[in-house]
Structure formats: C-alpha cells, structure tokens
Length: 395
Image (cartoon, rainbow, N blue to C red; front, side):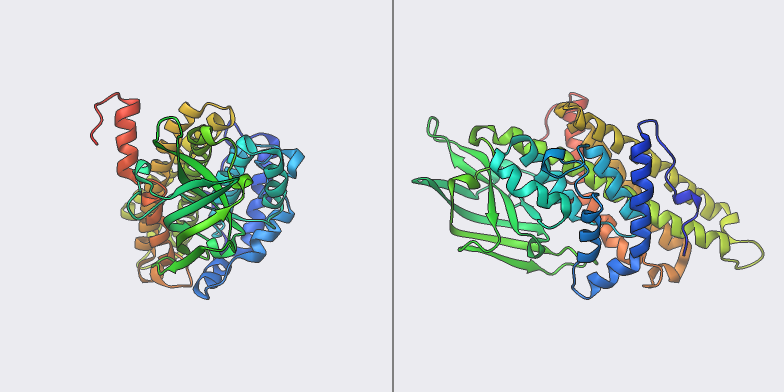
C-alpha cells in the first residue's frame, strides 16, 4: 500500500539540498524493504541484517561520523533524517540509536586515535556494531545508583556488575559499558566508560522475553571479574560525565526521530484506509469523528519533528546544555505523537488495525516503549520543571 501525502515529509527551513536528497534516497531504500520485511524477521527471531548492511554500503549509517574515519562528516541532524525516513517506511532500525548515535558520538568526540580508527569505519559501513549498557535493575532513571564497578589491576581493569534492557547485544561485536571507578583522591566512585568485546571471558548475556515485535532483542548482562586491557577505557577517566552526556543527548534525539517516523507510518496507513473505506455512503474519512483525531495526530507529529530537528541542530552546534533541554522535550513530544497516532490508526481501521497485514498492531507496544525508554516521560517532566521552569527538585 502506498502512503499518501499526509504521511510525507515537507521540507523544513534547515533542510539543505543535501539533506532533502538524503531524505528521498533513504525513504526509497526503506520502502523497498517495507514493514513486512522487518516484522517477518522479528517474528522469526532473525535480525534485519540485509537492510542494515545495505544502509551501511550506501553511506547512510555513517552520515554523522567524521569523514577521516569513513563517515559522511555531517551531524546528528543528518542521522535523524536516516532513522525517521526508515521508520516512516515501516523499517525503524533501533540500533541506529545506539551504534552511530551514542557510541559513535562518544568515540568521535572523546576516544583515542586508536579507538577511532578501530571502531568508527566499521560503524560507518555497517560491518561493526556496538551496544550501549547503562541501565541496571536498581539503577534505571537514577544513574547515581549504578553498581557496576571497574577496579585497576596493574595496567588492566577488572569489571564486575550487571545491566538490564540492553538492546541487540547478540548482533553486536562489543558493548560500551557505563561503570564506576574509585577516585584515588576522594575514595568516591565516579562514572567511566569501557568497551567490552562480546566474547570476553566472564561476560555473559541472556535474552529477556519481551512483548515487542522487533528484530532487536533485549538482554541482561553479567560481568564476573571481566579483565579488560587499559585501552578498553574510553577517552579520559576523569571526563566520563561529559563523555556520557555526549552520547545521551543524541540518544534522546534519535529516539524522537524513531518515534516520529512510527507516527508518520501509522498516520499514512490510517489516512489511506479512511479515504477508501466506505461503510454507508461516503468514505469514513469524511466523518469528523475520524478526520479530526487524524488531523490532531498530524499536528502533534509535525510539532515533535520540529523540536527534534531543533535539538539535533543544537547538538551539532556543540550546545550541550541547550541540546539537553531540547532533546528531552523532543523525546517527550515524539513519544506522545507516536502513541496517539498508532492508537488512532488502529481505531480507524477497526479489526483490520490488529491484523498482521496492516502492520499496526505490532506498533502498539513499540510506540509505547518510546514513552518509557531511554528515559520516562515522568523524568522528562521532572527535568523541565526543575531546569527550565526553575521549580524545586522533587526527588
């Protein structure tokens, strides 16, 4: 089924000629694979390997990475276009949020020269993938409670701890892990980032059964006396907080792109159906009971897209504080737009909205996840209340 104009992306003022061309090219790739491809792979427990590698060969995965390491030399604003257009075509690749956006941004900005040359070219062409591990069973929104620790043993590091809800570990070569090291001066624990190859002795990962139709599965990670060489430490041990937020802002921005793409896909399905489905005399889209909710979904989606692009541009300009505020707002707005659009699309199609043929039922849980991860809507509201409005901290 061809998506009609309400799901198409109008040009925004920040859209350069290159970004418009990128948008069209990525959209064409996504439509060639389509939602059926991704959902069939997910239901079979298989990965979206072909789409990922083709996107890498075409240069789409590396658009935000430095040219000297095989990337396109652009920014997160360019990577947003890639993920949003793939999602709009029904092919949201969750790992785009992780490997090039989080891990790629951190390594490109803070990694050693050797780390950049070892990882970034593979990130760009799709042949190397890296997961990101921060969440723990008792440290979700409160990263200060992270208990995964790294201690020095001569020139090496010894890693112990546990992570949960880490995406696509089984298809990645390594995981960038957020741990805590002891400050020799104060005795306090401080965050640090380590790259752990998947086959490292003492590192175990177990799949978490989820009610989500997605090729990217979720995992628990276990680190039992995992020995890492000195160069497993990412960048500077004392710059870990700055390094961490260099990845978390892009993460929120990319999840917003993921969500707005899902919203556009669902809205396109619903509008097509509302134009052609006749129950009494006219197509059901002529009735305001359906037309107005769909129009509202369009408005919410476009507003979320604008905030997502603002956040991306601030991030690419190096404004970490401004990008942090905008990224949280974009993620909040996009998640709401995705949930509302998918729900209204299912309601518009009635029973057909829950069939595999139309591909909407599977998006109910996927869109709902964007409200929860990587940060919940409630924590975003806390952030805006405290940092934007200057209200007292509530927790």
